[in-house]
Image 1 (cartoon, rainbow, N blue to C red):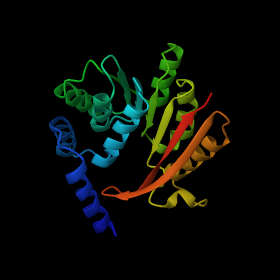
Image 2: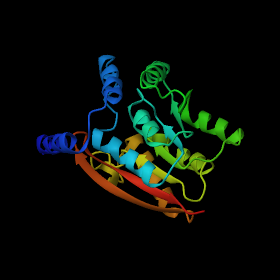
Image 3: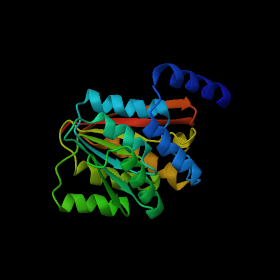
Image 4: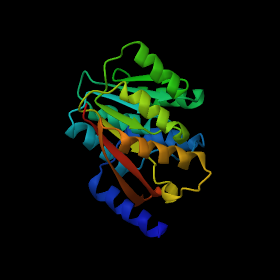
Length: 221
């Protein structure tokens, strides 16, 4: 099935999404350095772009920069005067993402913070940072429940929260899994459902990145 999923994604890429030299440069730089190929696919990047534009988001928060591929997608989607704040734990990835964002000419739209995401989030909270309109949660999955609690302190009514990679090749439903990543996303989804402040859904996906899925949440209050 993976071969067919990939072929269909390639068809969608060809007919729906124009080539973008900045994005291609960023992903190639990442692959050249043998970083994990965890960046979103082209269709997923466009989905983020469309969601940001449809929600008229100006302030975007990203957890998990990697080489800046999704960051560039989102920075290009926000209007002039908007900002993407993106958090990356590893110094080497932070440096490459900074380079890729400068190459794309988006340094005025993007603020990169290096360090543990929970620590960076708390720093933003303590500084009484202006709330974000759109939040993309794509960092280490065991900490997703903590990230949700912190991100809600950086949200306002109307904020959209996108949680990536939550189906885990179908292991989400495995209550006996000992995988910390599976445990993290299971608790994350349970917490989403228990909150009266949130309306959430989840969708399973297949494609060039395999079998996975995401959650989409609207902050009501």
